[in-house]
Length: 338
Image 1 (cartoon, rainbow, N blue to C red):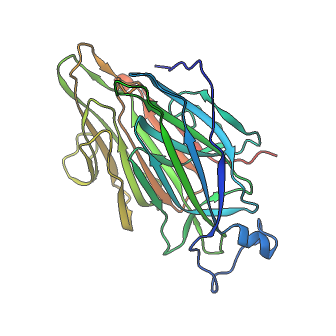
Image 2 (cartoon, one colour):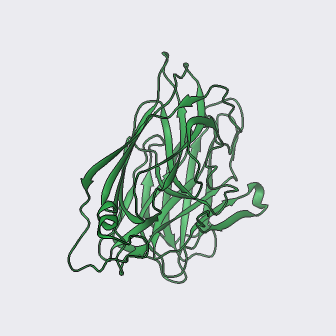
Image 3 (cartoon, one colour):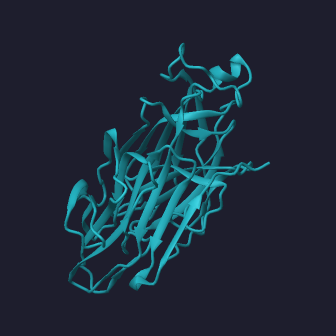
């Protein structure tokens, strides 16, 4: 279901903070391929913040809106930590790094997860936040980071819904800690997998399942799940079974709160054996009088997991189609624009 937005709104100004990050110095050898002077290296180790405010939402109103803004980092760097705070009327916020060199400070209508489904190689997800407060802290042993270009442009995709009886605005803040790339820094990216094979009869319960293997040699360090309001359980397990109904499963993530699912952190990072898969299971209780199906609205349903992994040169997405009719899967490699 595509949401339609007629009104346009302005993005709150981006604030660049001069506080240095906690990046290590001294024994690290800095790669100066992007940062060519000592000043550039210093500029790569800063925290950048953006505050987002939507226009007023009427009671029951739902929107998915996007905006693009650049941050003021003057040198290429690595993202080492991201902190996202979303408040009332916020369903989720996805931050993408985008290779576009054109800012778009006004909110415009967009499709949910539009930076993934049918995305070009110039837009990749950085952090997806659905809790009130989300912290993505990348491992430090070995040092892991997500690459950021100089004057990196960020795309903010904000799914908002006002479930109150009064008008409301949705707010969010995003803080990014950047540090210089070192010779031993490893890249991290996202696995984003889900299934659209969801069909639950009115006033009934049902489930959806997905089974996939991460890339060979992947180390997973953070994982979460995503459903909408009819979701009663989302779990991720590891197993060697041949199909989605495998029984030799050990659970590594569980969520019983669709609006505030936990972020599971693995320290040390989680490595799967060559014959192991991740198994995602979502359970639903359809309290409505219509058949529940896949859709981006909070009144429809989803079943997704996203996991951060390293070493990586690409993000991956995969969506299983309804009725076992195939998959829409792809590899996203970031290609900066000239």
